[in-house]
Image (cartoon, rainbow, N blue to C red; front, side, top):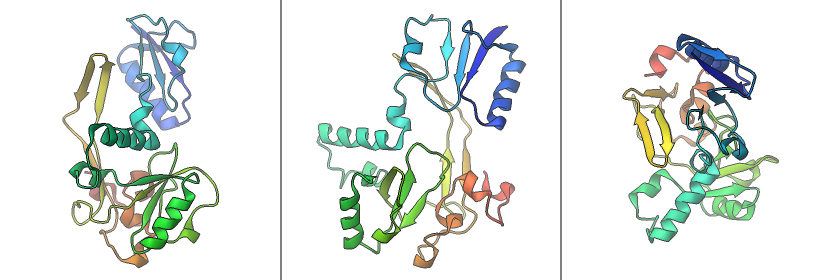
Length: 232
């Protein structure tokens, strides 16, 4: 038997899934500091939690992992990589998957200038520190910029790879058990979440989430969503 603790859970389904899994593995939930495994759901644990921790104890986060899981941190580190390695990101094939990005409202003037110069090419706005496509939107004019909040703004890739003529999100599951040495396990099965409606570049459909944003959370709100057809 092992003892586990749970921290900052706000999602009932996630909580129940973890409890069911750990119960099957003969785990016992505790609310005291003598846990063997501590599971954080939403936030990265405080750095001091890792100090002097026994090698026999486990936490489901690696310190500093948000340098790649946070939208802006990922772009910042990729940009630094291009600069330090001397790669020309305009001709390097990797760059098409990591388009030019800005912070809003910090880079508001640059974003407005880009919209004025290329109004035919939309930008995609992603609210910082969220997931599942929440509040994601496409814009083509500066008067569509939000009035509040902190956003990552990116060039929109308008020629995506499609499955059954639909945009999709490919999810793979990776377990990282150590950062030094780096040790990772990739699960052999994955999941593809398809948009409900076929992809279109029609300007009249720019604001249609059923076409442009394939996250399951948004797709399930569409009237013609069918899990058997849209989750592969």
